[in-house]
Image 1 (cartoon, rainbow, N blue to C red):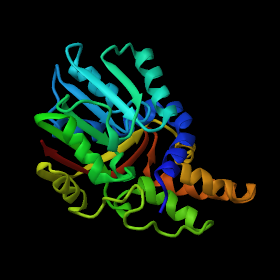
Image 2 (image 1 turned 180 degrees about the vertical axis):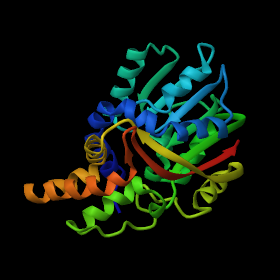
Image 3 (image 1 turned 120 degrees about the vertical axis):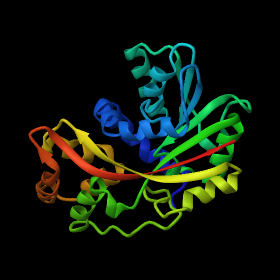
Length: 278
């Protein structure tokens, strides 16, 4: 099983690319952000914690919602992601958002600090999901809401499987263990709900969010974004010859063309939104 440091190292390599493509990624996953805001009942004036914030999302979207009377704190274990978050906050003029390096299982905040805690696509990579959720609950105010987003099954998400199926033709890809840090770690129904229940959340609940991942990009540009976003994909591509890499690109663009139009890319997606209260 990969260690937590392995996960951090992997995401450290991805940080420059997530910053490079920040606005496209923000748009692609805005439906997930809005679902988290709704599930955590975030409103004006609230204090909100975003765990595994990456390059500052959903934190900065939430900062616009809570307004100057509210505040948002984003944490991420990857220093490069935190640096990118701070640059984005400065660039867009957010003074109610701060960012720091930190991990979910040791949150550097007093108990009962936040009205809501959210995490988008972070919980799958926590070294100990139960400890992480327990910490989130600790820093919530009584009655506060916690909301997490995790990928539903790979077969329901061509954003992932379109490229994974191409790569399997060139690189052996053994499946991860059921509890390895992986995008689909919590895809099975009830698995993440049980984590919340074990950690002490009140009335844990899950729903499947169906939406479209949309980007105003050509298929070729979308392939570039996807191949740069994922350390796993970059690593596999590095193992190939230049001729093989060109063939992967050709086949990937062909697979992604199914979701392309003159308006850009639109890919159906399914994500679990899991929430609970303190």
